[in-house]
Length: 435
Image 1 (cartoon, rainbow, N blue to C red):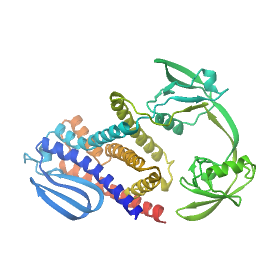
Image 2 (cartoon, rainbow, N blue to C red):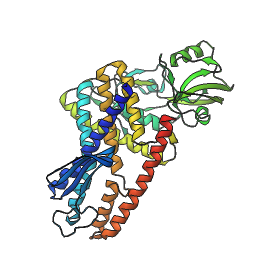
Image 3 (cartoon, rainbow, N blue to C red):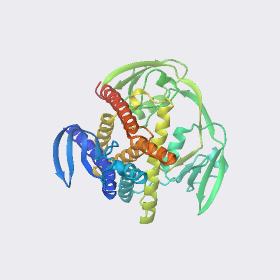
Image 4 (cartoon, rainbow, N blue to C red):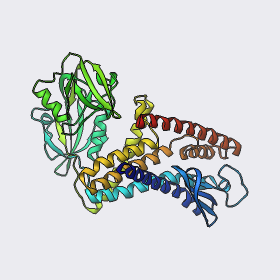
């Protein structure tokens, strides 16, 4: 029953984000005196419909997507004054651009609420490892990180994202700091640690040992994936991440050149993998930076709300680069089913920490999804807002619009390809989530 409620909650959040996106199109259509034939949420057969002010508002069977259907949107009714096609290019640009912009506005509003309640994660140095490159460079506890190798750091997650995307080597790293109100720049030589690595990360807590894969290491090559839960190594039961750490410290589990037999759970099914750890060197700056949150004043709350949205936009863009580079696994991509399943799982886990944690988890997901939807809709792909904007940019450069039939054909082809992609992602989700 709890799972069903979590799923319903996730669907409601997605629906509200989509409604806000489509409301952006609707509002600017009205501002530019364009007739809106239908404003709908979902796809498929209509469940509920009501006509108000010449617009049919409807709820459809499948709560995936939505639409603001305008008169003359496909290029017809050129002579009708309330037709989308009859408007000048800048009016059409404003109407199409309004959807993604409203997603960013929604993300900002939600960020204001979240930061107002739990505060921000300021990238302050909590501790400096003795004898590390950071200590040698003069980094001190209490310094605030402002940049790393020219990449601006506003919140701690900016630092975390940079380090996850850029593996440190023995080369110097330029770190910008704020110390006593003054900007300081230092060069840090990362320290290398050489040992045997299995190729996954985990938290040394009492929870079941869920792993995150490190690319290019043996665990990945053996078939392990993000979210797998390790239950045995060489026949020895592993109760948690902390339990494994204790076993390694006690010498009961040895990580060396010997082959390991790892038993893990995925989707409640037990699997076994065999691989040999590799001897490798990892590098560290030798610092621990704050990942907690603290409340701030009104002005900082507003400023950091912009930073919050900027972080999730950057996160989405970097994820797209990761995907296009072919570095993502099939189970890493998905449709609305995966989104709903992920939200449901996180809400279930958040319940252990109280109502506020559940609310903050939902707010955080809503900010991520709304920012993601804004970015994705700006991609220059036919049938998406970005594809239409690209056509209008071409029109501005040419000084005249594309023939209506050509524009319609481009959008139809894009829509068909988009539907094919959605079907693939949907079946991929069903396979990953249910099987």
